Length: 337
Image 1 (cartoon, one colour):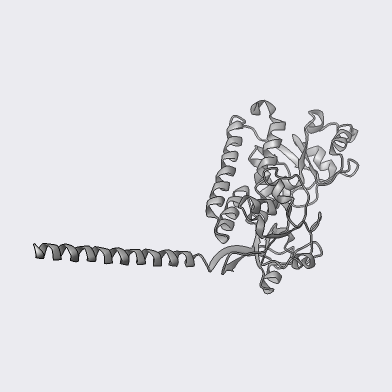
Image 2: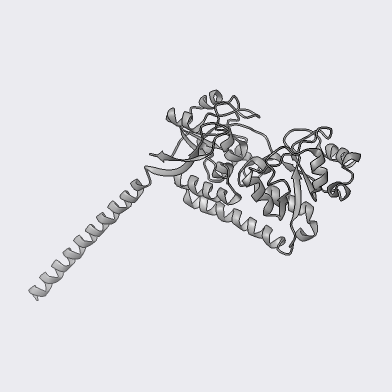
């Protein structure tokens, strides 16, 4: 009886000690996992100047940044979707259609300018991360400073992969994933990615029976007397976005300037006008419809000039899908009833 009791006590103590050891081990593993998040290496990009090629450049984060300067409105709105509004210390390029789902939060941010901002203004926010559109990482008056310049000042950078040469809409998902890792908000990042992919799938479903793509040309103008055709041949994100709604840039392979005469001769199905200021583009469009020089074009005869917000085209961010959805509804209204 005594032997049995002693054995039971010994077994109980042993199990207790095992449990403690297991608990300690689990706690140690958990601590190690938490510590293992940082330093975190994220593959990103840099280039020496505006004409140079983008090259891969790692950014190493010892901790999550606390002070983010977002160089455009869409960049700031992306951060807001991941719950990072309290870390945004400044926003440049405050123009374009707002995202209503984060508009209230956006209005509380420190808006630096309605235009692109330079390095001096950027540095005035005392950032530890400069984030956003790649083309604005320049030492020009309108640029926040090159990646190498900012890194040399001990400031981390994140260039949106969607905004570099070869970026596509799918690059947005990689950007969101990376930001989720940098700031340890993976659940929010995963949820936002799913939301966007669901929206993309819904658009594909609406247009699945459209077999033939339409062609379009982009006119970077708000003056009907000065029509400038921008071929956008190097704008992979731009061209990929339009392909989602079965529109092909008719000048995607054109490397030089495109004259109005070439535009007329090429005769795309659709013309796109960007809205970036307060110009009444409906009036511009009406004058283009009435222009006898353009009268032979299909887009003029069929009233196929569409106005799209500039940020949907060149914001290189998640909200481009909203612009494409709106455009698809205008072109194919019966499919979205």
